Structure formats: structure tokens, C-alpha cells
Length: 139
Image (cartoon, rainbow, N blue to C red; front, top):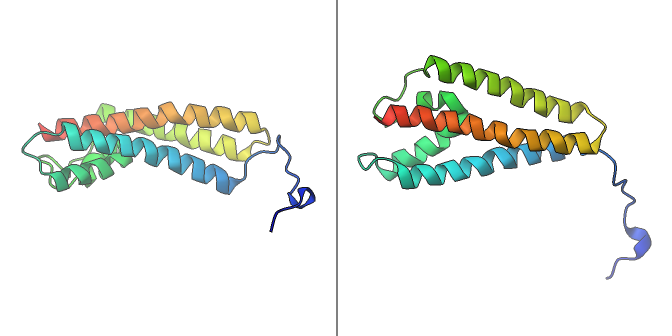
């Protein structure tokens, strides 16, 4: 049965995104970037680290500077992050939280888009610091 033109809901193109949609967008960006880093872990890890441990490291990398605490099987795993990594991670975490909070509280759709655009480099730094911690861990 075809849908009549009058059956489509009237949606305001300038209305802000809902919190549920924003949650899905931020989660997809975080996991999508994490999938890229997981692929880097699978290809670029040292030869003495087996594939299962590489996958665990890639998943642990989603936690940024604290990945080394979760990366079981890596040579120096379980140790807390280095001081510069922890400080950078804390600053990036606060900035990511502020961006997510700002996009949830605003009524402007374009400001939400700007917050999403600002979230992407923050996630890249977050995952990069985690990758650096795991590279140090593998030495």
C-alpha cells in the first residue's frame, strides 16, 4: 500500500536532534574511530603479540590513556598510564564531556552539528593517546 502525501509527519528541519539521536551519533563516532584503531592494532602490532591479544588491545584502546590497565596479555599491561598521558586524557575527557553536554542542552541544530564536528578530533586525540600508551606498553 502506497503512502499518501498527507501521511508523512511534518518535521521541522530546524528542530534540534533528540537526545537519543545524539547518543547514537556520538557512540557511532567513538566506535567507528575505535574500529579504525582496532585495524591498526591488527596490522601494526609487534610479532610477539598474538592476534587475540591484539584484538583485546584494540578494544581496550577505546578507553584512551587507561587502555594499558585493561590490555591483558601485553608485556607491561596493568600499570597506570604515564603522567603526561593521564593529564592529556583527563583534559580531553572533560572537553568531550563538555561538547556532548553542550549539544544536548542547545536548541540550535547547527550548534549541535558544530559540537559533533568538534567531537571527532577529540576522539582522535583520545584514541591516539591510548594507542601511544599501548605502544609504550609493548616495548
